[in-house]
Amino acid sequence: MTDATTTAIAPAIRLSGVSKRYAASSPVVLDGIDLTVAPGEFVCLLGASGCGKSTLLGIIAGLDTASAGTVAVDGRAAVMFQEASLLPWLSARRNVELALRFGGSDLPRPDRRARALELLDLVNLADAAEKRPHELSGGMRQRVALARALAQDREVLLMDEPFAALDAITRDLLHEELERVWRETGRTIVFVTHNVREAARLGQRVLLMSSRPGRIVNEWSVADEGPRRIESPQVSALSVEITEQLRREIRRNAA
Amino acid sequence: MPHDTLVAAPAAPTDADTRADDLRTLEAGLDRLQTDVERPLPWWRRAIDGVLPPVLLVIVLLAAWQVYTIIARPRPDLAPGPFDVAAALGEAWSDGRLQLAVATSLERGILGFLIAVAVGTPLGLLLAEWAPLRRALGPLISGLQALPSVAWVPAAILWFGLSDATVYFVVLMGAIPSIVNGLVAGVAQVPPQLRRVGTVLGASRLELATSVVLPAALPGYLAGLKQGWAFSWRSLMAAEIIAFGGSIGFGLGSLLQQGRDLADLAGVLGTIVVILVVGIVIELLVFGPVERGLLRRRGLTGGTP
Image 1 (cartoon, helix red, strand yellow):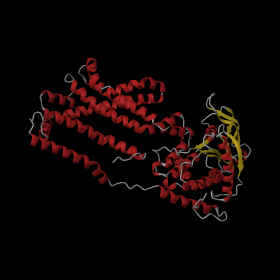
Image 2 (tube, rainbow over the protein chains, first blue to last red; image 1 turned 180 degrees about the vertical axis):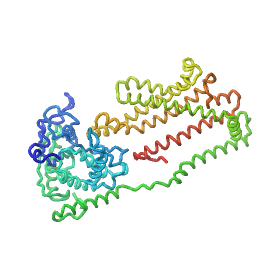
Image 3 (cartoon, each protein chain N blue to C red; image 1 turned 60 degrees about the vertical axis):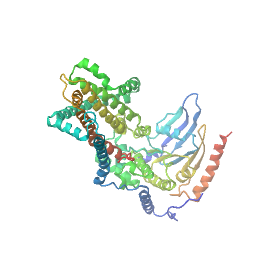
Image 4 (cartoon, rainbow over the protein chains, first blue to last red; image 1 turned 60 degrees about the horizontal axis):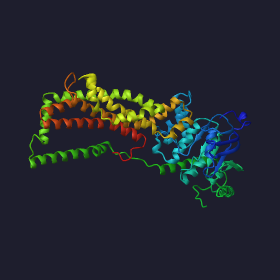
């Protein structure tokens, strides 16, 4: 984490007028996206399939480039995908250590090991440190991926539908886990999802994107009164409201 | 939408520590439910499972062969029984030809294979990482893999005479294309997502190659090595049969050729059995364990014993 006094002023992410098309003749994927994310903020990016939310995340991550507009990110971002994408021949601990080793890090080996174990403990996986990915469940693998993303020690964490492939019970627990980790580490999180409840459950701010072209059409702020539950009335009410507009946006594509 | 509550919802925001503890036990319970503990079979049980079926099959085949020779009484020079073959092998053993042949062929096979690995691995890496070269050279390598390497024997004899160089040349032409193709296929099959993750984690080009791509390509490379060994061994036998005499030593192929010249069918069949057994032993002692270990570590064992 960086110095609190400087990050309190500068935004963690600032996008202005970001547009994307893959070729001159192809349709516009993203159209004039303006987005500012404060340090330590938890933002959910919500939209139907094909609204370009993953493309937008890729642009913020530096995996893709914008056709127009400017992108400024506080340092480089760590990224988590829908698949855990762990290296199958390495144990959970070694997978986390990889993030500590890459990019010319000079952390000595014992320190890397200790730090990896610490992070695995943060996601409640200390006992599974020496297990290989195929011995772990989908939810455990995603938690290892979370520990690995945290190991990079980047201010910004981008998450591309990280829990979409998990069952509802596991997903519910991982929401709680992620929220706790977010509160403990103070990371800035941009969380992409097509699950309205998930967005309403997690985000301090929920941004709704329209499809073809991808634009941010509305945004909701959620008062942060400590941890909430996905079945709480507050989350339900917000979900209903967001779903209404999401359906209107989708219906526009029928014409 | 009804949603089952997993734990009693905290009425008032309780102490953050207890909530963290709740989550911890909850997660530990779910982890336990979602992972099943594999109980590996004891080693003797695995040994029996692995060894018994093939041994039984060999015994049955030998018995059937023996019964056939007793009942049908074929001409012993055209269809020798198992005991004739064993006797021929015993004779070759007692005058030292068998040991010499096995030692010569194994030495050539292993040395040739190692040279092929040393040449094929860098070549394969070059092809895997440099697309223009792969496009140019790929079809040729695949063609060479399909070309029976025996076809090189006449040319090799004209170039190198009846010397060991001829034998090694033929072995290398047999093995190198398989190793190169195995490595190229292994690298091509690395899931793109793994490369993407490597990039996202900040790996340099070199780190990506050594820590992500190469380990991920290992199963394909090993398959190429296995096939490379098989091709070395069979090319070697072919070369030894055809190229006979001169300064070429006495290998198993030479033993076969000698048996043919003497019309000693029992000796020829015995030699074939020895060649087969060498192949099986190398697979069981070298490639089998390496491959099983590699796949088990990655959870790719599937139905293998």
